[in-house]
Image 1 (cartoon, rainbow, N blue to C red):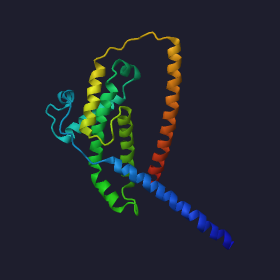
Image 2: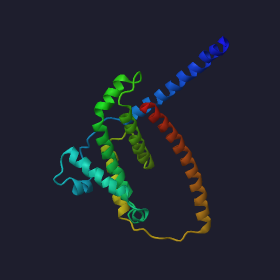
Image 3: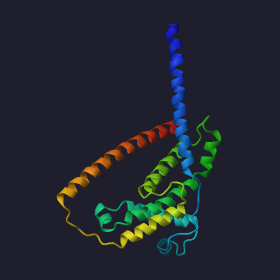
Image 4: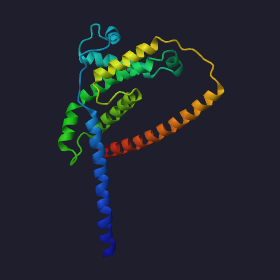
Length: 214
């Protein structure tokens, strides 16, 4: 019996400690990616014309952006096909939404970092912030925008691209069957890789949320 207990102490405890350190390191990486609140100094012309007339305060701008973002992401697929820039505009609004969430959670983030990793303080709020940032990272990655780029730079890229796409006309074009088949093969391969990557990322995120929320 003593031998069994000794084996448990030697084998299980180091493994448990390693597992904890692994999730701590993962959370540390996610924390470093959150960045700090940055209020954009300039906005795209179209954005200013739509939202900044009589709206100067950050609260006013962020509230209007959140409302518009909600409308955009609820649009149907058919609408998005007719308006190819719609969802890209939504990504620009999401940048403002994230910065506002970061601003609201500055105090919680400071308190969390002061006690981490010995103690978890405001874990649910930090987990929510990390989840929101993962969405921001996914959107940026889709258009090749570095996570370290300023929100002002990201917003301008999104808005410029959306304006460009909105000017185009959607047309149906006949494509050779062999090209369609090759495109499907490539698309299926990319989707498989993408699904695997997203599955791994979701598993990591689930571990983080579980650890922070207890």
